[in-house]
Image (cartoon, rainbow, N blue to C red; front, side):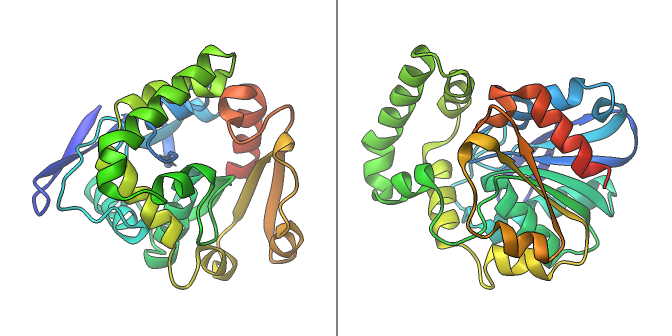
Length: 261
């Protein structure tokens, strides 16, 4: 693991670089999660693992700091990732992103086109309003979430893991080390979205784009439009939103296909 000091925030953005052949794959993770806990099977795969990889923990999550002065909007998360990629001297990298990270990846590609060669997005948030978890968090005030909501969320996540959910068994551990205010403000930023929207930005991009969906998540009403506009759609069988934990081999196969497009 390494760390980049962001002097204007007096905070460290932490990341892991795994050696391999170029171009490097950049991995962005979901809301409140750590990149290593999300993409470990990708890094260990014989094909994907041969590529150089940069696994980024967003500010407020994973091993990164959670500066109070940071806005945690999608635009500012994308800006912090851009600062890191500039620091590493990376250009035109394939970006693999999950859920919340997908919204950040689209924002990054739209605002810094030199950094993204392609996008492989696993159930990304593309529209304002967020998903179930971010809506639940953002429906509270920050004070309420920091006082009570965060501990309740962690407790429920642990309970779901103990009830047999492999995805929650893993993600509950990552949520426990996330910052309450970072998680809250990131959720609010996701619910707010961007202008143009993430979907509009994705459709305007000319780079190769792949969207991965867990088969059990059910069809997305916008899939036909995405496919008509050149977005490749791939599916992970026997999995829903937690596809990388519910069917790791299927997820790795889908990411490999997306990266190799």
